[in-house]
Image 1 (tube, rainbow over the protein chains, first blue to last red):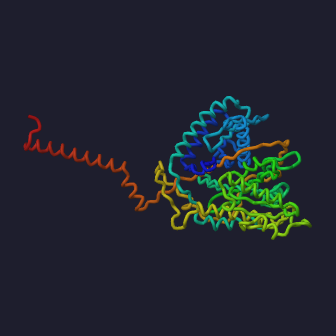
Image 2: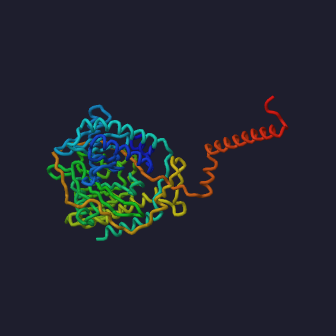
Image 3: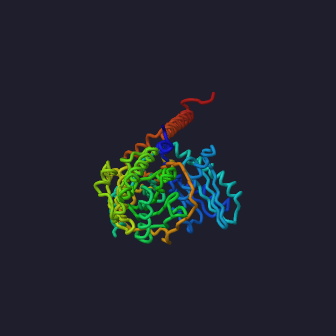
Length: 168
Length: 314
């Protein structure tokens, strides 16, 4: 049986710098149109891919992990209701709110916004932003996978870094 | 699965602490949070029940620092140990690059240890991973208790594939760093084996690059740098989120997202050859040649006409 993991592993995504520039452009445009505070594009494992807007006040790593967890938990709820997934999640706060929109098969766009805009505005513009990003992902997905390479010194440097970090 | 983000020059690895309930997984993370250099760890986030038992996961981001020009980060998770929360365990385990199995050394806990290890094996199998193929370290915790199994007994019952093991008293911080250091080393070693550049061929050529902008690959530009912890988020203390106990279940989605700059296109004989023999370029050259021949024929005809050799019009 081919699992979801196998499928995703086989269809490995490779983003190039130019791809990320395209994605950033879509995110920035969406940020301006929707009037939201910041956008984070996060993969479903909880690693952040890219972000834009005012992210200084946000612990990006923790938010990314929690977004991925939140999405995965609600996906199971969706399955119990006979749905594949909930493609849009919304968490409302007193001051700030966050909307999670699934982008393609692998990523989630987390949009943080406050009272300067409305849920409707964010939802309206996020739809086209997600569609535009999905087109970029589709284009990337059709390319042959290139072998990413780390620096030849990575192994030695990693050992040094671990010795330094874990010296008690 | 490791995310290599060449655009942000980051490597992100996921480490999961697995084991039976109350074996000391969260305590391990608390010790790492307390003892790691202040600017290298973020907040310890714990989604727990009101009784302080892990409900979903504990999460601790840890920044190792610059490794060969890449900001190397570990996302460390624990799973809820209780049997009841298997679906959340599966979710957290998804995409793990390495596992620390925390076993309870206390006599009478062997069945729970074995059951949890079997559960780990099953859950990994569901994600298409064999237990022996993933970096894994065993930690025999609570060695300070009076009535504990001997290491030999634990090894025989739990470590059939001879994974590295460490004795620990996590409550006192003993054995916590060596365990994590060993696993982190195995994860990075595995990463280097899979994605590391060979010294002799550190630059790859992109055949499908749409732009001619040559970005230096990380292998070509980055230097092996000494370990320098990266100032990330300020450690502000443990943030423990209490929720009412309930089964938040989740299935897993495995993602491999790799971001890299367009590999460099070095000016070498082979790359020039690639450019000169491209179909588009050949077509352009043929067009130019035909145009040149056509223009020459017209010029020659006009000159012959002017010289009176031939007449173009009657």
